[in-house]
Length: 162
Image (cartoon, rainbow, N blue to C red; front, side, top):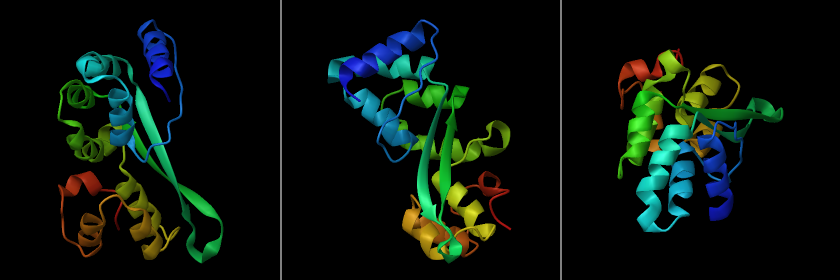
């Protein structure tokens, strides 16, 4: 949560320790951005490489109201450290590509974006369309997807839609 704590966690991870942590961020790209940008700019390259080499996964959640106001359900974004993810983490200016890499990795690696998670919850009847739209990351793409338009490659959404 602060530079010293993150630095300690990175050193522990680099020496083989399992490090679990929480950050108050909205998703995986913001989490990575927060970790890197807590350090002075002259250290960004070093920190970016340390994160790319040592992170195993990032899970983020948003609690969404269930249909019929029957409590809440977690919509979970899952990012797993794959070769593609490590490549994006290690290179400056590529964090904006993480969401597409996460979406594309759902079949092979079990990853999913928030929007994929919300679509799955909506398709199963667990949440309403209004709740999905309130919590989605990219409202325009989500609306296109609901209308049957493929805003991204169709295989990245297999299993989330009927």
